[in-house]
Length: 103
Image 1 (tube, one colour):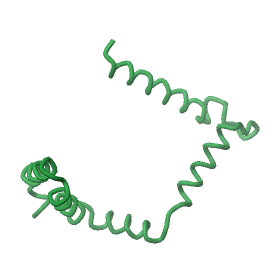
Image 2 (tube, helix red, strand yellow; image 1 turned 180 degrees about the vertical axis):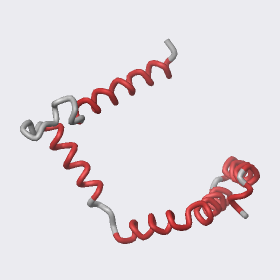
Image 3 (tube, helix red, strand yellow; image 1 turned 180 degrees about the horizontal axis):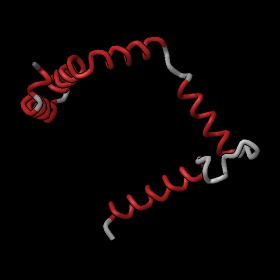
């Protein structure tokens, strides 16, 4: 069997297992049954949602507001400057193929 097909099957099965464990429809995540997995999932979710800094929030609002008009040309420029030979080639290809990004 192809190694990528095998790896994809394993990842899919793990995803389905985790989805079943945290799904409220399966029955493992009832209000009366506060399982360890549900508590860990809730704790991880709260950690991610409460870990934002003011600077990060401003950056995300700025990137949403100006999006592709500012972000992608900066990324292409940084890739061109710091990407070495392959980075320069990729930056040129991106700039040519997505010329409306730079206009």
